[in-house]
Length: 223
Image (cartoon, rainbow, N blue to C red):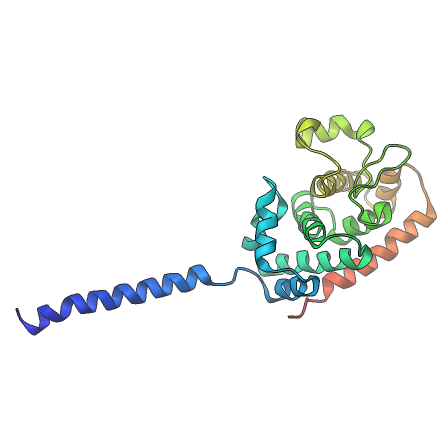
């Protein structure tokens, strides 16, 4: 056997090794933006926790978070931190689920991200278990007795979702808010429809919270 033929298997093994090394590098590459790791670290959790939370509930907004563009990941991370700052009793898991849900709702329904976040904060302080004496429920304080049919058309039978689930609540509230914005033309009039009455104190709170959320979203999360 010639030297050239004897060397060929070695060359093939080397090429195969290089290919596998490159594939391994691709599979091992970090799918999360640096700012995501920064926020996770501030909350005392890891990327593994984030991936696990996304797998816990079928259809969770966190299930595809790893595949989002870097800018959208940064928005979700910034909102998770913002929510935790506004309501420190919330778990990191709840904050990340809500942060991701706000980003998804904004993209899906076209509602301004800062406005949806501000309404949730004004309505419930980001409390998923909030329930008013009038029967409004969840993070966005949606009235299931009033909006049951409309929500059923968009999200399916109520038995398949619950406003106690923070992601479902945010999607439902954002869907309603986006519709009011289209119909009324301004945020102020849309808020009157959302609340069911004009309330200057409520309008001012939402405006203040919206400015805070906008500031958070405008500043990239630093690693």
